[in-house]
Length: 474
Ligand SMILES: [Zn+2]
Image (cartoon, rainbow, N blue to C red; front, side, top):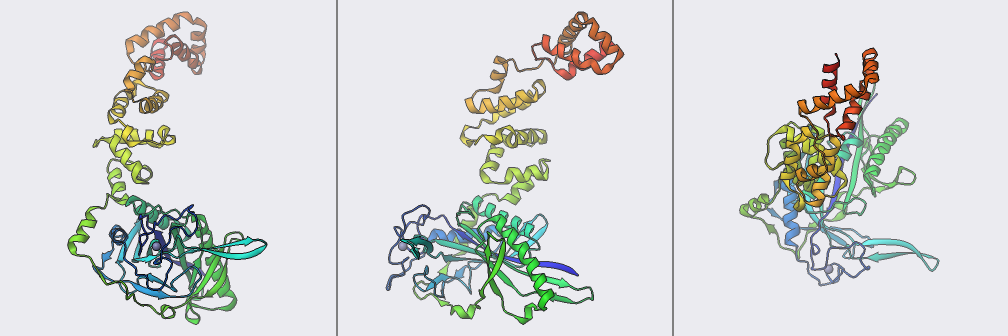
């Protein structure tokens, strides 16, 4: 029996616009006194009229472009009707027929994940369950109601929990790069709902598909992976027990219990007919001209994939290139230090500094002086690795030329052959016993090198000292 997981992901991204999707209330809802960022529109009061947030629409379009989507230049909003306590109006304003963006794709290494759509909608309020005066109550907070939300729906092209995580990392990186969301899973500004089933090829040549399951309420990246793995196994086991396949039943929704690490049945999934979608009568259709789309396109920064390719062209490893491109701030720092140089040795040198000793400092791009890095690089052969690290940190922190620091602290190594030869001769003359030892056992050269370092106050190039010792003693 062979098992092939089929996974699609719905990702919700809260946009970090100043105001909400259809009113002027602040969209910031973290650590805010409940129900203080509300108005008749986001409370769903009768007669209140929604006005779309232009920035949010433009950002959704921008994301669509970053996801290599086709843009629907003519689009409209729809009402999705359902009842839930935190949905004040009894419907959510969203998009079904004409999303802002469709038919995109992203790449995880060489594996293509197709993007079905990216559409614009509004977030709901929040139900807060707690015990008050000994009674279990549910309180409602509408600060989040109406916060702009983009939903990105992938095709079921993901084949494992690990790949789902890579996909989510990629989406997160992308929306952060284009500065439209913090995409913080723990805070809920990025949420993910996997839909999973499994293709099973039996030993006697049959192919069956297990029923579709959507998983809700997974609140962390590790949770998503664990939930997917759990569900794959559960579906295979269930099929072994009752033989139910995709054709026998509707899609179901299962919740994720993070304490027990298992999914549990919530309900049979509604079809879109159950939501009685219809065009939102209070908002006219939206149209973007080709010129407007081109203008939004021109605001896209260089995206991670392009950066990685550029860094690979500098002969950096795939690992280093990805690490440097991981966030746009870090990539900008690297590019500022690199200062348009195409010297791959220099690129590797500063990569090692940035992902090594400088990693622990939160670098301020304004404070970075590319010349200082160049100076350290040009004199790297006269410096040992400890001095290089020290100079990189100290010159950054004090804003001082590393060469001045190296001179004042005597960090330059003596690499002048005749100078070292003088020192070596002195050491040989003063240590006859150690010289004897060396002649019996060449391993004991370490002691003599140590003596050279000692008489040079640590500034002799140890490799050179060793070579000259060997030359003079053999
Ligand atoms: Zn409002």
